[in-house]
Length: 92
Image (cartoon, rainbow, N blue to C red; front, side, top):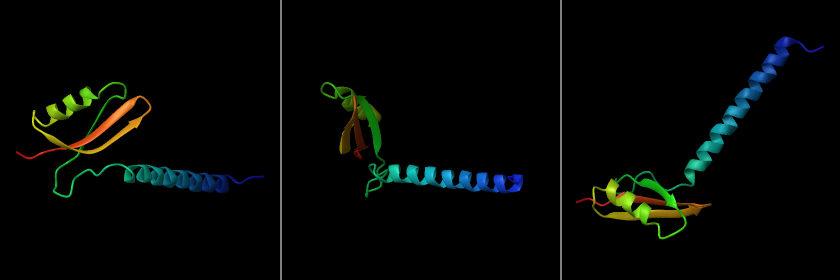
């Protein structure tokens, strides 16, 4: 015979453990990405486009986000059919 208090206690511990594991997994995933800010304080911005072709869509998105100005590429990656460009706008 299982006592209901014992079962609830086990469920609570399991729920807490799963929550902690999910939080650790999320933090681990975040730590492998590019920085949110560069050492000079400029924020970085990720944009995505199709991995096929010349990635012109990503370049156009970066220029638009920088109000037509220039930008520094921080990181690039390809995952499946998606190309990701991480950039920081240059100061004027």
